[in-house]
Length: 126
Image (cartoon, rainbow, N blue to C red; front, side):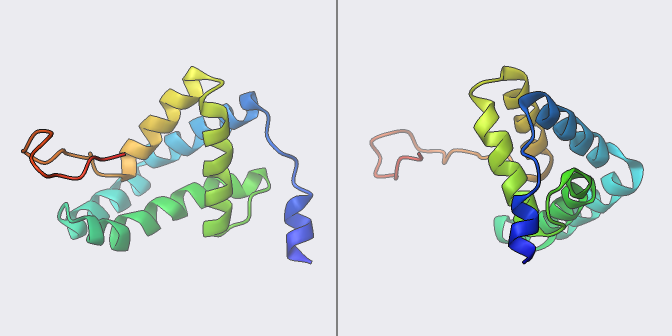
C-alpha cells in the first residue's frame, strides 16, 4: 500500500518546485552538509567510480532530508522522482533550469572533453 500513499502526494507546481529546489541548494550550503560533501570529495579523489561510491550517497541523503517534507519518499526513489519533476520544469522555466544546473554542479564532477579533437577516432558524446 506504500505505492498508493506515495501516489496520493500532490505534484508540485513550478513555483513550489522552485521553492523546494532553493531549499535543497541551501541545505548543501549548510556547514555540516558542506563538510560532509568535502570529506566525500576528498575520499573520491576525482575518480568517477569513487564519486558514485562516496559523493552520490551523501548528496542523495542531503536531498532526502529536504524533500521528504514535501511528500517524496525518504529514499533514493524519492530523490529520483524529485529530479524527474525538476527536469520536467527545466524547459518551461529558465530559473529552474539554472538552479538545477547549480545543484548538479554541487555533486557531479565537471565533465572534461578528451584532449583530441573531432575526427580522431573518439566517440562523440551525446
